[in-house]
Length: 331
Image (cartoon, rainbow, N blue to C red; front, side, top):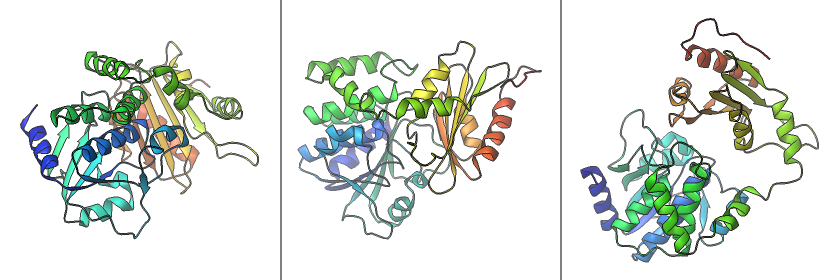
């Protein structure tokens, strides 16, 4: 453990009232890490509030039934607290208007994250490890260092973080520490099959058709090394595809495909990029060109413009990232 991480632990030990926040549209890593950290800090006698820009997705109800997840309403006051912790992100702008409120608060600011940070360091202390497979894994380390006994909810939270950010252990970020901790959590009572069913097998009957409509937009570029799909707004009676991971996995299954870009419209008229790589291509660098970020092999960004405009700009930028000359576009 390095000095910065030790200082973060000291700040947690000294704190009494905590607000834990995450990024917009919190994913499984964010939601799981928050549940584990909230429960762990409460076991130490601390007051803890979870406050996010958006509510958790319904499939995480096995955690929301155990922990209260607050949703920030613009203009509202934050709970009285002396320590603020941003989990699974290191940029306050990813918290929307909540981030502006936090920046003005007099509390000590902490970050627990595994993403690459670009920009000024606005926090007081940070527990960061970009080699960690999930932010929930970092929370597990923190709880262990604080001598917290891992209970059922903490175990469920950490396991949720790990499996959602490693693609159920199939991504390249799965390492020995990840598998060791997962084994410890299973030994403590976590049932992988039950969690898999809760997270991934509760979709509506409309999902397959939604995936089919997205796949119809598929275009290949750079000798089929780059695959791009666009998620059009749903028509009347259609169901919107809110999670593109299934589509991304299908496209990554194509042998020659190295990079996949999924672009969809958002409710505020912008576009959201989800970028994945299964080669040495750095999609984090691509996402940063558009104000986003993440990991080398999994990143995203929110971009101004129409769906077709944004997709075209992304294709140009992504194509430039391939070094081979003469790559052609095929539809």
